[in-house]
Image (cartoon, rainbow, N blue to C red; front, side, top):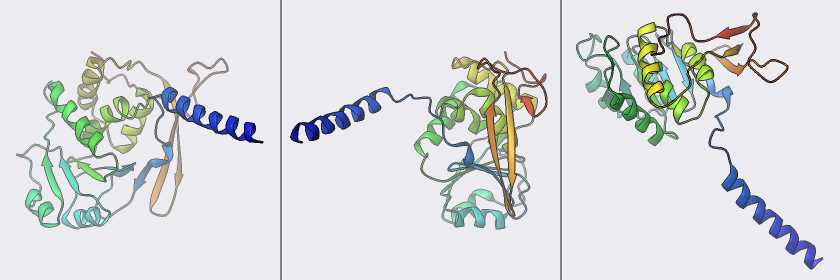
Length: 235
């Protein structure tokens, strides 16, 4: 009995060590975290883990965001864009932090921009963060490199998620692809399948790679989607 107990303890200890040392860094978060939420005047609002991605919120929308434990609002709009109110002052008055991170999609962006955004999101993994633009296009673009490089989600799956969240403009996708290519990411097209489960106030999405019988990527049609469109620039 004593030998059995000692052996069991050693086995558990060894398993713990091996588990820690061999745990793959590429384990991705559960896809069930992807939710499209219907709130106030925001027709495009998506929650992925602790990150909210949205179009321009109204004052009432920001109160709702504050009440859902968000502590920082990241604004990707240019400072010259009209918001109909002083967003910085209003966000601060609600007790949240405000960060202006304008993303100009008409120019090639420095790598520092996306590096800085990733650093912010990595530091705030466990803290709800709200990112918005005029539409959700730029917000999703800021989030996508973090999803691929820091949460280790394959590019095609992460791109499909970002498009659910509002990423839509070819020029915006081009900027993100430039950055990901510079960081060694393979952005080649892969077929993915997107399924949704509607609810009264939110829709849950699931994005999965499509594999053929040999374990490779399927090229068949139907509910499968090649998420890299002809307009997505890769160089």
